[in-house]
Image (cartoon, rainbow, N blue to C red; front, side, top):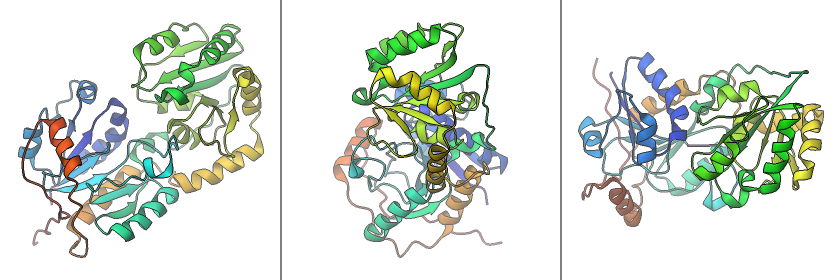
Length: 359
């Protein structure tokens, strides 16, 4: 059979999630289009030829499967709606308000690893209106196989920061001044990215530090930078988990929920000592990180996108008569229509099944 996929996004940081999936879908000879429900995402999609510019064209396209790298998906399109996640669980908020919030819109969750799968499966047993299949996460496919890079002559530190101001090192004056000093003494090389949602004046402030030992990158494609770095310096962002899959040490500044696999500090004066400790490759820390990775994302083959495509096609044809109807969600559905400027009474609350063609 031939299948029609739609990659549904909101922000630019979803592109690296969708690109490996797009490659896998096209490799199999199926059709795939992109759609963003926000301007920022539409701008990021740029000159791609396979972009649907309006929700009306999405409806006309009639996808079989929507792969959503954002929290919402239109209920008024009759297709299989799949959550593929826009990040790992960064633990920036309380349990119920973070990674595991169920919005009542999706038929299938393609989870990243055991620590995510177990929770969603427990919820699925209670709600009974969605299913869960563990596939791994498409975004990290290009990270594998991991190549460890430890440069004894000039260590490279990758810096990343969340957009949540109260948690963001990018907003901290003392951190900025410390990195400015360290970037001028030539002892380390710093490479930095900031979340697209961080205010432009903060981005410009850090970009102005650029010199022979400090480089600022305006990109959402982090994996090439991960590969260059020996360690990471960050705060509370899901990029920590992505970087950590390389089993390279991570220094965090005021992490919301510090874990044993992180080297967490609470003062800017501790940045350089923490960097030195991380560069020493502390054995206990790396053992904790390796154990965490096995629960977070045990897949090291770079084939999570293939598993997502396999899982969604299989589930597309599966009998779902045992599943409950999705909740009414009237307020959320209205907000989706308002965002898309597409007001319709149509709403498909039963999980979509595509019959298998007779051979």
